[in-house]
Image 1 (cartoon, helix red, strand yellow):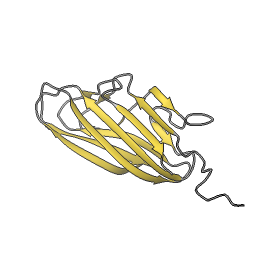
Image 2 (cartoon, helix red, strand yellow; image 1 turned 90 degrees about the vertical axis):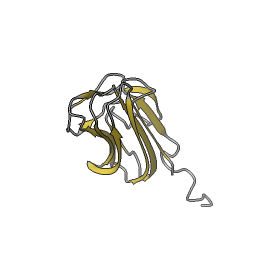
Image 3 (cartoon, rainbow, N blue to C red; image 1 turned 30 degrees about the vertical axis):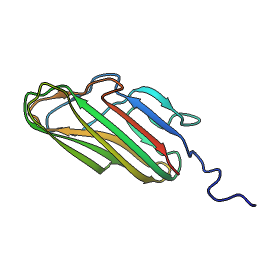
Length: 150
């Protein structure tokens, strides 16, 4: 038909960006799903593909995901681990050691993933500072974004 296979790919060029509009408390040594309920934009059509916690791929393709989490200052040393969860399994991790500090501590993660339609991606954290930590809730500190590359 004369149309290249790279033309008219479904959902190509769509993306989303959300941030934590409310504090999430992350208990010590507990795998915690983060909520990113405040929308900056979401190009998912006809309805968004992100529910505030889990992104569902609308079509098969290659996607780029980025996330950051910032915790309020901690008075104890430990580690903060941020995870990209693909279809319920740990897929990528970044481990950030933290020392006693009076400033917030941040962890970021980024990855390119190949997804089939219907597969899911979410962001979780684990921290072991000995006490619960709160995520800083604003668009500069705790956020999740993604887009379909091809």
